[in-house]
Image (cartoon, rainbow, N blue to C red; front, side):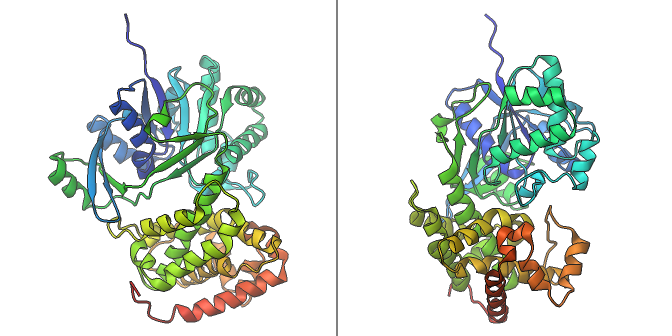
Amino acid sequence: MAASVPSVWMHIGAGSFHRAHQAWYLHRLIKQGESDWQIALSNIRDDACALLDTLSAQNGEYTLETVTPEGERAYERITSIKTLVPWDRELNGMIKQGADEATRVIAFTVTESGYYLDNDHQLDPRHADIRADLQGEARTIYGALTRILLARMAAHGNPVTLLNCDNLRHNGERFRQGFLTFLTLRKEEALLAWVTANTTSPDTMVDRITPRPTADIAPRVAQATGFDDKAPIMGEAFIQWVIEDDFAAGRPALEKVGVEMVDSVLPWEEAKIRILNASHSCIAWAGTLTGQSYIHESTQTQAIKEMAWEYVTQDVIPSLTPSPLDLQAYRDVVLERFANPWIQDTNQRVAADGLSKIPGFITPTLIECYARGETPRATAVLPALFFLFLQRWHRGELPYEYQDGALDAPALHALLDRDDALERFAADETLFGPLAQRAEFAALLKETVAGLAEWVKQPQPVGE
């Protein structure tokens, strides 16, 4: 009797997070004897070709090093990636794999700005990458999936799940709306009807701090395991994955390895985005402004930790209450994780993409505080820090290159050159939505920026 063909989970986005998160869960299933699912790893851009080649030479295997806040390290050889999809400019390998009948899930990790959504969470067709993909290119997740699913529809038409694995709020819902809009603008009527009938896009919440790999990981891996790994990664010991259980073509038994399969991801998603992601950005911006390089040292700086703690305690928890989660306990666990000195996560990594994080992670809490009749003084600290951070960027005084997928550098430089730069920043509807028209918010932001501008001039000893 012939052995059954394993189902394929194709992932788009060959970054460290996927290898430390989804690949780890699928690996744990394989270790339990559940070998009916495996991963095919691919990438839209050519920036992961060297990694894909390295992993291919290692049969897709690599070592994940995890470390606790107490410094306890563990090592695990991850074996769930069985196919490395070679990159080519036309994405032929990705299209072939995505159209393959064995592929039942197409997952992807995209930064918030990679969805090209406007302030109303609608696809922005004005962006150059979207305009290019509307003309037939494949620079974005929308263009790539269009090519893949056209081939799949033509080959056999079997259903497939399109699964977000990132921090976009309501990620499945908002991706799906953006994708259907994209197909409408492309006049892909047949594919639009097929996608609507034959795919699902579950909301998800993902969590594991995974810094960019550094050169010191490989020697530790070699010493601990004897494996001369050319592509090891490191992450924190903590891990979490919550998924809306709405798959179009079957799924792995992820609940067997600790994934929470739920009817609605919303409570977990809101807690994670507002408490973890927004606090992370707060700490990174504040730490950068005070001359610090690492998240742990900034979290261990009492004044910075208090900013994050007050933001969550004063404004976020009241906004999210009632909740099935213990929000105070979650806050404390998050800050403990950030203080982990062994992760060596950089402020540079976490400070990135602020132009998308302000509206996605922070503005909802500002709006809800005002709706409750309260002044969001603790939350206003976050966009105020970001404004001061942008001023440093504008003057060329950041200690690193700022990366932001939503950055229009000439326009932002022009704004920051103006005497009324802060007023225009506060009035930016893309960042602050309806608050951009409120004089009381502009006044609060001006007051907060002034106070923080004085604060950053003072020395901030770590651990005090």
